[in-house]
Structure formats: C-alpha cells, structure tokens
Image (cartoon, rainbow, N blue to C red):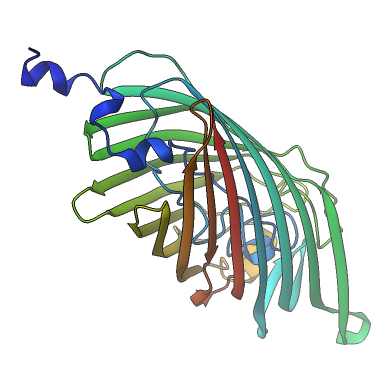
Length: 337
C-alpha cells in the first residue's frame, strides 16, 4: 500500500476529477488584436496583442501529466470605437477618434512533453494567426480640415509561440502554469497604412495561470495574469509602455459536459508611451475592463480523444484610450489526442 507522501508525488489519472481529463489543457492563448496600425493597447491603434476577456481558457493552470497533442482553433471578432474628442496615434499620425473592426482566426498546436509523474510537467505551443481588420479614422488634411479615411488589411498576422510552459500541481484540485510567450513581427507592415497585419515589434509576455477545482459543487475558477513588454516600433519611433493584463473566469460544470460562467478581464497600462507622437499625446496612457458570459461543452471521443467547444461574449464595461466594444465575441474548438 502506497504511503500518503508517495501519492502526493504521483498524479495518476484515476484520482483526478473527470472534468480535468475531459478538457485537458490547451494553455492560455495570448490572443492578438490589431486595433488599427502597428502598435498596442492605448498606444498606436488603441488596442494591442491581447483582447480583454479572451485570454483565459478552461483549465488555464493545468499542464497535463500525460504526454498529449492538442489542436485549437479560435475565432475572435471585435468592433470598437474611440470617441472623436480623443486623438489616437495611428500610422505615425493622429486621428480624431477611431472605429476599428478586427476578425482573427488562430490555429494553435500544443505538445505536452513526457516528463513522467511528479508535481512538474512541461509543454510548448505554436500559433499561426490570420487577421482581417478595417479602420475608419478622421485625419487632419490640408488647411486643418478633417478628412475621413478608411483602410483595410487581410493577411497572416505576427507569429506567436510559447517555448516553455511549466505546470505545477499543488494538489489534485489546485494547479499553476508559468510560461514565457513571444510575438514575432513576421506580418506585413507599412508605416503609412492605418490597418496592418503586424504590430512591427517583438512582444515578450511572462505569464502565470491558476486553476482551482471544487469537485463537490462542480465549480471551477481559472485566472491568467501577465505583463507585455514591447520593443520599439522603429518605423514610427513609437515605444509602448508595458501592459498588465488579467482575466478571471468562474464556471459551473454539469454532468452532461456543459458549463456556464462569467469572465471579468482588464488591461492596465504601466506608465506612458514614448516617442514623438506619444509625447504629443501626453503618453496616451489607457486601460479597460470587460465582463461577459461564457458557455462550454466537453465530450469524449474514440481512442482517448476529447473535444472541447466554447463561446463567449465579453463587452467592454469601462475604457480609456482603448477601443470600446460591445461586440467582442470568441469561439473555440479544441481536439486533444
């Protein structure tokens, strides 16, 4: 008979809650967004690489103790506005207000490595994103006249990858995942365009995720927090300040595989942007909050495969110098094998 101490260092499938193995982790996707031109958050384009409320995923803090492959497809749509009384940096210029539409399609492949039993497990992931974006702006033309302008872009977006995701199991119902996530400026970029399929900078995001499972009540709490660090956009001489982001999701899970819950998210800019355009706008510091519902469905397939589906609506409830959207939707499908 194994001792209690021995069991604490091993994580056999049979002692884990079934919901964990149905939804075996696809770690939090640091999802991107292109508000308008080539930078981030309350900076150029007034959005950034993460859309508030879309970063947290079910089982965000769990890295599977067994080696698996997971394929995730995600679709994100946002239609947002910044009021015309505010100047917005875009393409090395400023716009009086901004209307932006973004549609993202992301394909992610994740591999959990065979590290054996124990409290630590490790994974890596790679995301290929495609973006469609449309921007309507009001620029200052000859003689100081306001000139409306529309721009569109549709192409592969900047690549995203997580070289290492380290999961730690505090217990059978309490888990944490640490990761370093990287966005590479691989997309096409033109500083004169308002809509670009790239932000034209490297972005590094150290991130921590936590999952707490309450088996007796069928409730689960997932949270993801990280800080985005950007290199300078040399084409426009714009330096984004670091951004802190956090999403929290609570769900009630039912025996038929359905779960319903709520998501609360925020992005807060840590300091002011710098550069000629940012300095003229006093650093263009911003933040936002989003709150909305989520519904998921999980089912087992043949040959130990599982399928997870999710749909969420996370409208903005408060925003400063960032696209304000009541139409932010995300749908996901994940196959684990």
